[in-house]
Length: 117
Image (tube, rainbow, N blue to C red; front, side, top):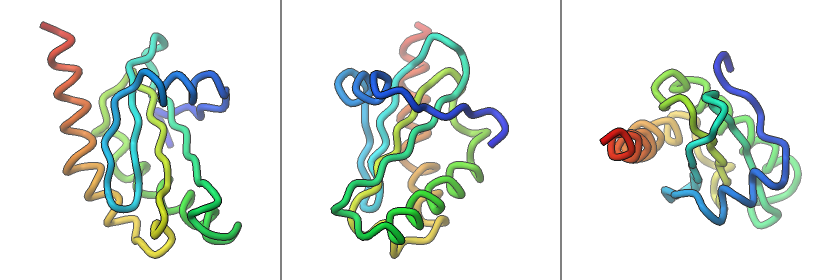
């Protein structure tokens, strides 16, 4: 991922869960919030309800691949937490990528446009 930094700190995850906006799909939920650094941050979480360790790792790989394919379309200066939901292991990266392009990116752009006014 060219323009993205990993989110590793727990306080960033908690802040996004509490104060960020979110968009929920069938396979993933995406939390997003404007950050102060100007860089794009990405964190991926998979809970135990998603499946065993193999399935959770597959979900993370699928989500990373989908994000990488449409990374340049995401607005810069936001932190994103992508949470895998049960059934994510059976999904293809193209399905998640279509969700990003169809729901998440327009929602984030709508918020970024309202903040500029």
